[in-house]
Amino acid sequence: MGMQDVGAFAAALAIGLSLGLIGAGGSILTIPVFVYLLKIDPLSSGVYSMFVVGISSFVAAVRMLNPIDTGDQKSIAKNASLVILSSQGFLVGIITGLLGIGGGFLIVPALYFWAGLPIKKSIGTALIIICSNCIFSFWSSYASMQFDWPLLMKFSSIAIVGILVGTRVSFKIQSGYLKKAFGCFILWVSFYVVYKTLVLVPRHLLS
Image 1: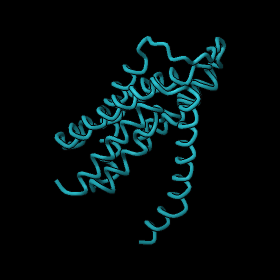
Image 2: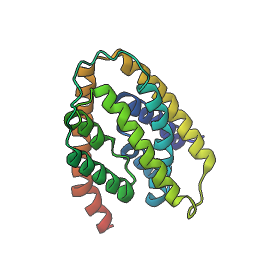
Image 3: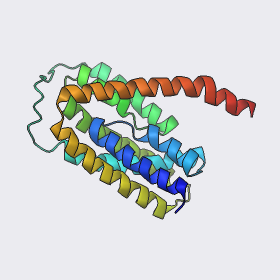
């Protein structure tokens, strides 16, 4: 096993931790790992990420939505706007289909701010939605591609280990800290998108 493989599997563990803790950071982290560390083409990397994140999100959702006392007292809004939630779901679906990104960084804020779910239930519910998106996206591409199943199973298994650790830790963390962690992740995503748009894409076009 080379250093690239070690780095990739360490990244898989970090991806699982991110999904288990804040319900986001799946595909947006997985795709660069497949592309830059494992040297898989971007199209295949997007489909591979759907498999990894779909399985991992299912495990995390089962863990997160167990009937436990989360200590989060935020009341659930009874009259959340159906139009806003439907629009958000439509947007997430488009992003998943075009970019191979599950959308946790969009779904969690929508469930927390617009549906009024507590942060931990927002994360768990988002993971179910991400899982559904990923399974559908992966299945739509399954017949037209060849897959490295041993690699996918190893990567997914390590990500699941990270998820089991992440969800266990999240049960012990106050909701306020999870909100801050998710906010930091959103800032990181914003900087990454700006960097990719202004630096990586022009560099690729010039090369």
